[in-house]
Image 1 (tube, rainbow, N blue to C red):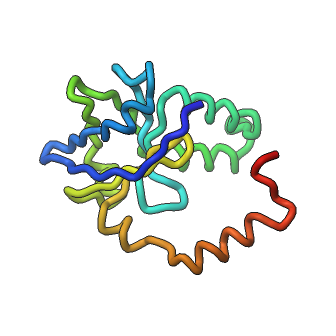
Image 2 (tube, one colour):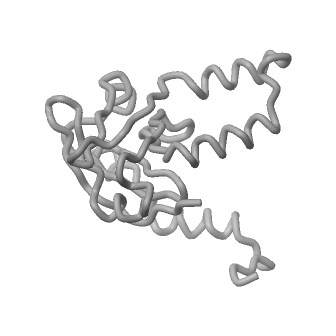
Length: 156
């Protein structure tokens, strides 16, 4: 499974195209040329999530192991909301993504954006929102302390 690393800036042009930063493109490896993605609004954050199609399909398979949207109304409602606004994208010959206007508007993307690698997802943020939403060092340390208890060992 792919893991994306790095924080990169970019600019969306008037047609909604934004080049995928070259370090992230390189991290795609062999799948980079003609790569296909699913773009969607994040559930918890005010950004878009760019999922390589293979990662998206694996995630959907995992979800379907836990959900039965055909026979369970809550599962059905969740999947509908989860899937709203998704778009399948491909890189063009200049390694640009065409961000649908509706999704750009939902995330409040302006001209300047930030790409952030978060495990197997590339988050796409409006630069001003990204900067405004940064957690203080003290809050981050507190959160890390809540998540990682004394018995947590990263090297296991």
